[in-house]
Length: 73
Image (cartoon, rainbow, N blue to C red; front, side, top):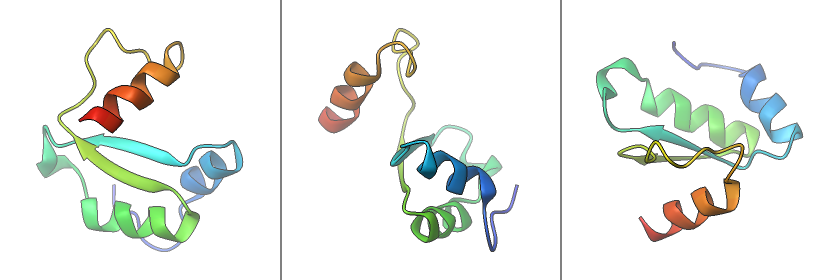
């Protein structure tokens, strides 16, 4: 999916309090990282890359632990 111009999902996420989105570097050929980063900048959402979160870290249930994990990484 190419993210060019406006990106309603990012705008909606920002309005709901999302400020950072972690994208995985695994399977990078499937993502438009440049377009995603530009869309994030337009909507005030930081896009970061990692090798993914451990399966045990559920973003919805353990958000603070996820933040701590990403800050350490």
